[in-house]
Length: 313
Image (cartoon, rainbow, N blue to C red; front, top):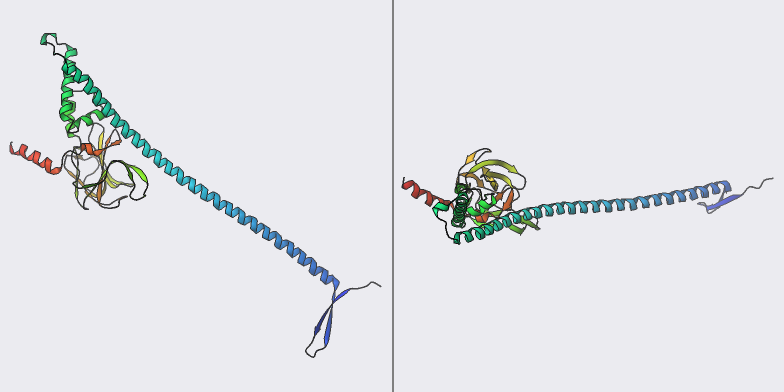
């Protein structure tokens, strides 16, 4: 006869009598097998969950590194752009200095030599005297800034005095009167707190102050620009342009011809600005140069110059 094995479960009832409940061994084996399978299942799930956590952490780390690299790349792009502007501006200044120095050396030496008689004058002599005339025109206009504009605009040995006189219409006014809060060149960005190259100058003034064209020209652009807010770009000829930014409102339209001293807009805080001011730029061949050298006259001085001329007519 086949033997059967049981597990006896003993308990005591309410009357204190013992009760025995036999449990066949096959149920015990089934229970143990189920427990072992469950243990392996739980262990496998725990391992999978742990691996998933590690992969998630690695993914987040890679994504963070990617974002950091993207920010660094964008910053490098901005730095390269600023350095390009600085190099172009320094190149323009170097061209002005070298051209002015060469002109002085050659023409001053020639001016000290004896002048030939009228009978011996030739076409070369005429060219020589034209060069002398241009030199004296350069010397007389150096303090007013016309010489710098001429050299930057490409006026060379084949030009005439008319070419120099024509540059009198180049930008020379202060667009507004106020305190210069940020000059041309390297500075700390007031919003980002990082170093940057400032392409113009900032002049503080109350909101609504009238902004004047610094020279005769044509409106190339009048509207909204990213960063600069409401801006106006004037073309003065000879590859010279001026830019006026952060306006509260604009008083001209693209294609309009404006005269020196005409109101083109009003001071505001539009765009990327920390307060009411005008951002003013002078560009030669699309390269920003220091506007200070061209700001030689105020509106009051201009009025004093114009009034005597009108009274004498």
